[in-house]
Image (cartoon, rainbow, N blue to C red):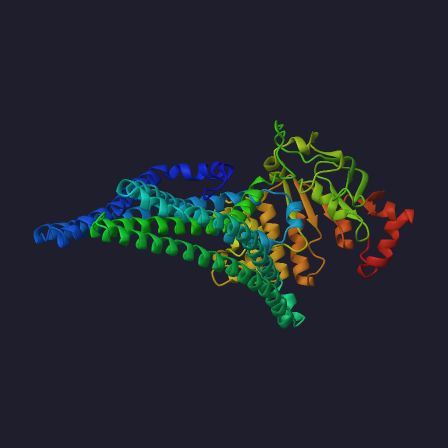
Length: 586
């Protein structure tokens, strides 16, 4: 019967168990001593009964009873120590595993998260690893305890009466066979339960993160029904698991206690024949119960282990997932200081081999300190191109260089430290304002944080917040307006002080006052930096030194605003269509 996880799983867990090995060793000693006391109990009962019914020795009876109380006291202390040491070690091991999995996940590329639902990953991180906790803190130790009871009980039974021992052990093959038969089915249905729970968690997470959309479209009832359908799937899968488990427990219980009844019948006949004393029979029965309980516990542990296997497989599958974007084996150093000379050389890119190319043979150069705007219709590849610079995805062919070095030969940390991003819809974390501004430089001093906020024209509104820079902004910054979130994002970029800036038009959906403040902050942010702007508005286009027009993943025009207008091609049409209402003299 396979109770232990696969050797590979133990090897994977060992680095996290090793720091607690002495704690586990002491717990093992306590467990062994406690099991030895348990195995001694039937022998002591044998002497106690014989003293009462055969020898009629009251003094001996008193001494044996007091000795039992003393042994049980020691056993209680041993069990306490073992349980505490194992549970505390298990908590630490599982916390380390959960931390390792989280750190691994946040290093995976955005492409991985595009293929996975966030709720599913959260379920793996919490529920599945929580299931593994039972393996570390309970199942392994209980397996060891029951094996000691089984082996010790069989040994002592054999020494007491070999013939009765054979009768006792006749039930074991049947129990083991039932455990294997039901265990396989239990693993399958348990995996189904875990899958359904992950799907339900994903639905809940999606609804929570999009709560404004849910409520604005008055779809609370629809989302509730959607979650209810997933929970119905969970219940159906859990009921199937409960059915398999219940049949399993019923079969095992019948087999074990039937075996005890047969032993009791055979032993009673031996007592009547004068072959055994009553005390010997009782001790034999107690050992039989020990063996039956050990076999029952081992089969129950086998059942629990089947439920753990699916969780372990998922956790280790995630840990084995290799980042699509990773540091090169022998990274090159990035020349310092970084000048910000960016070049795309004949770059093509597709998200999946079966999908069409999002970019085809794109060649663009951004000189140090130059501001270049990407212009083009929706779906032209502007955001895709911008995402290639910090290596959120890698080019399919061609190359991108920073200061003459292929970015694929750089450490990701070096590359991304040199690039700042201000998205059109900045996402803030739920912590305080100061922590959000300092996200790119956690070691920044309060004075540096405030200076960045002043430069981004954020200090004025931050001062008016209830706790100033310590004010919690809420999940995704929901407690701040769009303009305030943008200014925090600009302050964050200013504090990071990157050589290259990627700016997804930051003023396209703001009121006039917020736009004025952010335009002023951007003037400072862009100064002296190589900047790639995904342009939506005329004000941004006018800020750029040069325009690159994309259409269907290709560069179709390149030049200044006036030069492209004079050509009268795609840019001129976009200008007339999209920018006519912003008629700013150029």
